[in-house]
Amino acid sequence: MPSVVEVHVKSIGGSSTGSGTVLTRSGLILTNYHVVATHDLGATQIDVKVGGQHPASQQASIISADPAADLAVIQVTKEGGFKPASLGDSSTVVPGTQVIAIGSPEGLQGSVTTGVVSALDRPVQVEGTRTGQDKPLTYAAIQTDAALNPGNSGGPLLDLDGRVIGINSSVYTPTSGPPVSGIGFAIPINDAEKILAHLGPSA
Image (tube, rainbow, N blue to C red; front, side, top):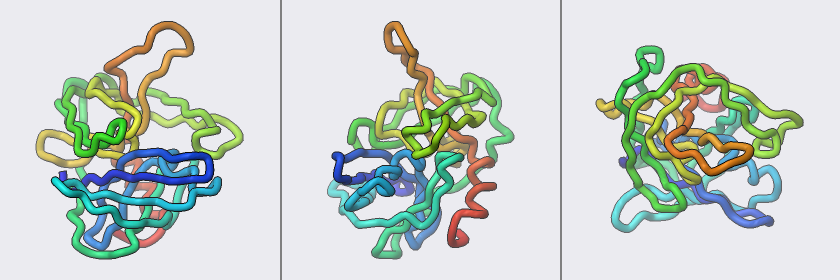
């Protein structure tokens, strides 16, 4: 729980809330690019809240980002005192693996849901408008039935040993018909680590 933060972005057009996964004690945080994408479109401030009974808000800035992978790294302005998450190995995950999701759905910080891995290598398409791209992006995701909602994006999908196996990124949204629950997607942490090697300062 101390390794998961709430990311709140204020922009000219409004505000948005997501989650982030702490990478280093100094306050490098991994999140989805679409959580902070409005920063490039006129956001005035990124605030990070660390969990706890009375969470304190600290300002952060984007260090680097890969919109095509829907990932970004932000740095808290006041460095130090963070608890890094333990990164796992998503190649060991199989359908049926029990998982835990932590994040701030609808701004409810520190919310925990559980479920299983439903499938692997699901092709997920994200609208380009969410990431500032001219066309949609597609990536192979871990599918889970752990409940995810707006605000979970950027938070970790964990195994039962508390190791991050994915970064929660999206939920299934049908083009027509009633909403569908229990179909969420996460970017495999092994894929994220490959990109992290090229995203800004070393963890």
